[in-house]
Length: 201
Image (tube, rainbow, N blue to C red):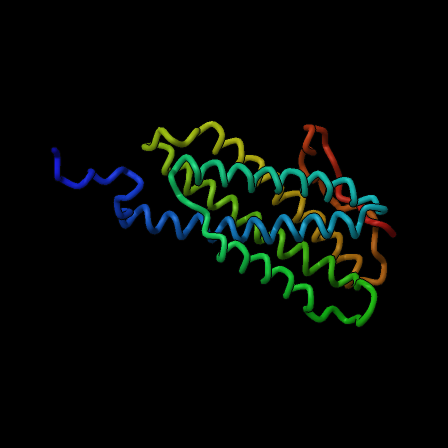
């Protein structure tokens, strides 16, 4: 009879330092992605009856898909999701709703500026993450480099759309003569056609 203990499988080996750091990094981004999805969906609901509602709804769908892509990459890289960290990120987003915006009851125009700034920064961070994963994909066959490049290009476009919406929201909020159309092209929509960022008058 073989009395030696069974050999440890790959899943029981202690992670290497790069793997440990990658797990922390990707879980931080997964937590941020959860907060971002919650926020952009709330923004889309708040503006569903305005000209900007369509753009925000498209962004909500895309950003939700991006979160799922991150989960798939984490699975491919054997990085488990650390749900307490993810839940903490969701709670942080909910606490952020209590931020003063100049009005006690109804939604303030300042909410648009603050939320769009938060989303713009979040998407910029997501683009940086895709760039980091692209570096990893160059030497790791578990990652699809083409898929990472596609997600990076989409994040760059999302940044452009959010920035145009943010500029227009700031104009509406902080100036007396606000226009309803953003001054520049926001890049292609989800379906590739040019779109402008527009808000209710």
